Length: 230
Image (cartoon, helix red, strand yellow):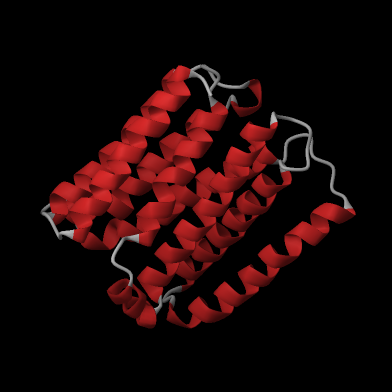
């Protein structure tokens, strides 16, 4: 990694520890929400302002959409006077971000039998998650957006794993992309179960740290590092 990439990794590791620490000690909810949002906002600014690998020339749009999603899902709950019901609007930019990421990852891609085998666990996971959460998601619009988001996310995770077998990037860059995709999947499945599955609170009571943010920040930091050149 370049000095800039190493600096990004160290800086956002520190911010992750700060966020998890503040949450562990139940420090001011609004403060934590602002730090979360500004962490992802600053990461997006870095990506937008940096020279990108040619393969990731459109990645800036993905990060901008992620910030828009975070405004609704993360920051809106901390702004007094703002309708709390708008949080679910964050699903829309996240869906757009994952769909765009799908087109980036599958650019110049030729499907083969090996990739079909790799897809099997993701297909099984999609079926299981849909079967489990669908009864708790209310409204046709929310059901539709949630399902499209899940499909787009699973394609992102699957296609990111395929970089391990495609001779496009160096081994280290391919590994970073693959890990970022798995972390994104773990994070957003956590969000889905936290929002809709009534028994999920038991996990939150047992696990002392916020698993969603433990996966979320590293996942996007890895993608940011992999997409920029210097």
